[in-house]
Length: 347
Image 1: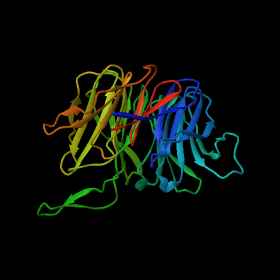
Image 2: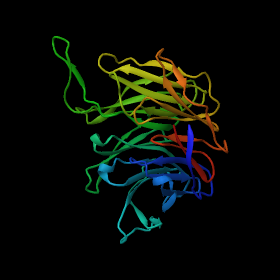
Image 3: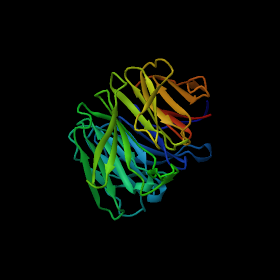
């Protein structure tokens, strides 16, 4: 794994998250200094194009939407709010907006119905429409959706993880499987909406949208961890008809759960490595075959071998600082957790 660039963000306090957009040319970062910064990182540059200030507390996480819906960025904070930012024209900016380098973003929606810190946000696959999941320390998950007309509807799932929700990740949009009398597999209907959540109750829960009830139900839960589950990531693509979910926990373990989507509802568990010190984040590559693990001051990449076991591909990258809670996101990997600097990595 090679460092191809390092972005000096100018954040004054700890960086909690860094996310590349769909095309990998814009990098958004957020910090305990209550700000969000957006950089143009195309062609190995690092030009600040927007400095956003709208939150009243540390900003924990960011999520870019699919470009089908324009340049939308969701942010969540200790201030109990979720803000949705959109790239705008130069006129009529609301007070929450700020600019740098000529690119302007404004808040098009503010959601403030959680009663505690909002820790995680994640946009759904574009096939589901404009839909955002938000998880909070109040134990609930909110699903925000819009048809693009400026109006938003909310479905709230209460008591998902009573001690608090730490992470969310959407399943890829996959059409349901069916088979005829001869056993020939086929596809039918609309994609089934699913996402996975992780919480302070040591559990991973998988949620499914049931059309007949117009609501979300818990499909199953996974209980292999014995301490807070800090992060969870559903592989963005599926191969050989298998779903994959990665998780990491305060117990020092990283697991990959798999199931055959054609015939099984049971999830098989595989442990990655042996034990990690202070593991905080997991992220799949865009093809879903390489897993990045951020633990303390190290980022390592893992891939399953012919023997079915995950093997470390590289010597772990060591950051300049181990302070805080490092996160890792894919495309070109970006890691966060330091004050000021974000290394961009490539394999």
